[in-house]
Image (tube, rainbow, N blue to C red):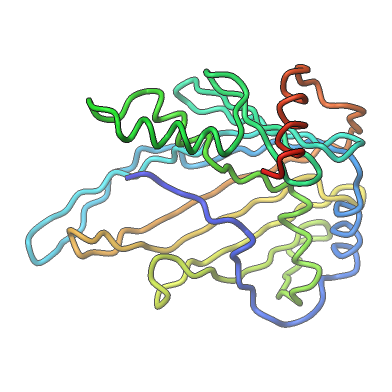
Length: 254
């Protein structure tokens, strides 16, 4: 079974109090940071087999974390480049303008979201079943391109319940509604400070989702670490054709 990761934007945290002053300052600094880089490392690579007893007998599921490792940078102009690398060797780079317009570098060259959707539709209509091209097209389709500052800044306004584990480590817990609103996912975010700034944070998600055919709840567990580097990037290193394609996307409003 394919694992998945819930966006932090969906997290519903427990209301309690404002973040501790040190953490609030670090979150504010990250939000105001003009240029920086980061890397996302996914844990629990698996595969992990699990057995479940049902009325029809034992059901075995295999969970495998297929999320890519990610490297990203935002430059002084506010443009962002995110590189996603999968274990099977596929790499997709996405360039995002400050307006939100984006283009992705694929085996077929730099493509817009509209072009990727069109190619996916053509692949689905083709005979012979899913192809390797269809696999990377699905991965290229509307990726999550949020930066760490966009992911963590909402914690400044939630009044979330923070626990100070040490002088420079804070944990906030909450939940997020998954496939079944009666069984929300448990979410824990651990933020590590160093020198008064956020150097890395971890997101752990545990819960279950329904498997319709077997009528059982399959446990879900996700863990990822985000490492930040506060070295300014003057201008992203991307080929001219990527910027020209992005400029065309912005001019068309797509």
